[in-house]
Length: 509
Image (cartoon, rainbow, N blue to C red):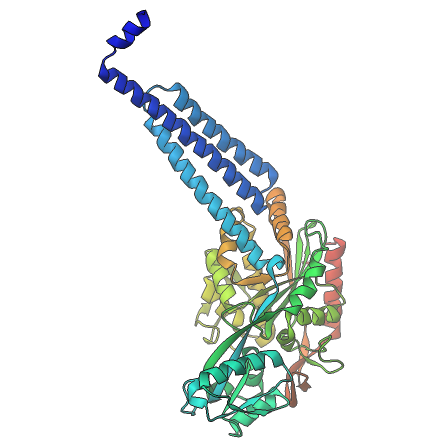
């Protein structure tokens, strides 16, 4: 009876205030509950990403959960509206949910560049006429004779010709040739009015016909997506390597095109990184693009330029280098011009050491003045520096050394604490620009290992040497091209250095 009288005596204003306080308290508890759920989701996605060491992940989870518990206590104990704690809960929940989405997208990005998702290759097929031809589109060529050849890329040629017939509005006439050389010659001498070939062969035609690109014009380009045999071949090897404890070789291939990194092309950059994760040593070996070698599984006893091996697949380039140095190369990383620009810009630029002072000629995409010593480059500048071979002493040999200097600068930047923390965002930004057969698990272990152990790495660069010559090449029969005959003493010295890294010995200064 006494309690009933007390309730009757409570004014409507007080009852309203009490209801509001109760509602605010319940709202606060709900908000903190959402925050705790968001914390668990964020921790789950971070764990799924697999790049943060367990000790750091546990510490981060503990801090976030303690903070959430503190806010929850404030909601239960504190009388009144506790507006600040509620706003903090809302803000934290938003940040954690955003972070969860970010971790999810980064995980997918890693899968995109890793061997777990390989299997497709994009071949860019070009329709080309002479530069003085009036045709601007394929529909203008319905009465033309097309020069084609099925010795290479037969399926891609057929797929491209289906596009040509559709765009021309008729089945165009064709003339078959045995080689790309004959096909191009027929176009230039007027025997045919148009030809179709893989864009990856364009560089070879430049070697044979001086000023080829200025004598022709491209009127169409068709992207043909196919299954990639080479990715399946090398992925089986990759799964057997423990990247945290075993010394391994990685082939770094730089292809000479822009656009999709999966495009078939010559490999102008051919660098082997021999990595010992225990001694933290890396040996970078550059093999000149014009090295005159056999291409296992392709050229038989005939020889060709190393750069041409890339046309037949990254596995053929790897097999060629394995044969040259007597090693196994389980991994590869493939980049192109677009890749380098994207990666360097994503890192905020890099500091590159140049052996010489020179000015680039612009063929690499930019004219820059390079200083002897340290240079800070953005993406376009780094590409111009790495591609220059005419205005730098030593020509193509020095270009190879400069390319390794860029890789060294990128590696040094990537292992800094700042970049390791930003690794997920960097991977997301470059996921369309890099292709590797290293598995998701192996990439995760490498990043985890560096975050756990820290420490600096020792890097040494070495370049294979040789002498210039003119020889016939398997990929372009009938025409002698500039090649580099390997210096066996140089090759043997590199073999010894690779073995030193593998054995855990100290690389010479």
